[in-house]
Length: 423
Image 1 (tube, rainbow, N blue to C red):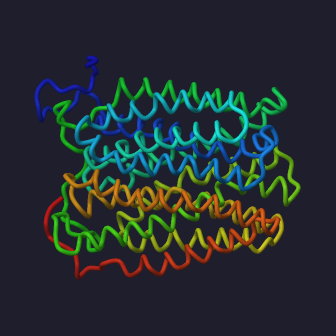
Image 2: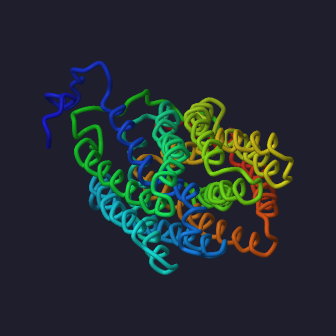
């Protein structure tokens, strides 16, 4: 293990630097999320129009390629909990990022439909193997009063990746012409490989590895938190959280996959202008996880979730009603502001709700619901768009789903289900 300045001389000894190593974990986690989800998933939105032209594929095939990614993700989250327990977060993160980097680069050399579909499936598997243990680190390194903010800061890596893709992809297309999307995939692969090496160097599975304790105060659960020890209602409660996460997964990637294509094909925007608007999503989403994650620390998880679903519903409704450029801009801003809030709240919630020992399996369980939802969403949206010639109906359906999720979130357990057990 490298001789890092944060390593304490003995267990329980304070570090010799003015910050806790947990913030290093957050910074590296930011980079991991930036690579495995931000670049591995959201860059596809910007690359899709030129990639579709280069491969000569219709909307539904491009939607199925996206579904291949989510199918790989679904498989990996089923396997991840056992692998995390056996090998630890750091090892699994590297196992996810290294082959994912190679698959990303290989997409840039692919053609037809089967090859990019298969490679993007492998990218999805790598994403899950990197993302699940990264989010589990939050419960290990932070007490409940800091988890929402820590999760939000990590997830902000997605926003940084979206902003980068919004400017980088149009530049690559101007520079390399019809092969710009290929250069983009190669660059994504190289970036993911660099992040893999960074994670192998700096990530530590738990504070005790450096003689430290989790950051924050160990507090009794807030009124909206669930019982952190196993009880009779935990299974039903986990399913309810999973259904909410499924609603998020089934809706947010419909918008996230096709909004740039909508701007180019239906609004007649140039690729550069569409890229600028997509970078706005990244800018506003940069704050979404931190804002709503910290807010949920104060007002409780159910109200935080309901508020996020309300904002998302407004964003999808504005896009589906086709109210013109102003309505689209407002939709983009609202989508960005709420984009990564649900994952931040869920990542903070599992440790609060079910305790550290069950955090990995609980997060993986609800992520199975999430992955199932996002596996179906883009492919169905592509089918709807092919049948109607527009994505407006698909956006309206997503607004209906998130509105129902908002109401459902309000019926999560309230103060009567709280416990005075410590974290």
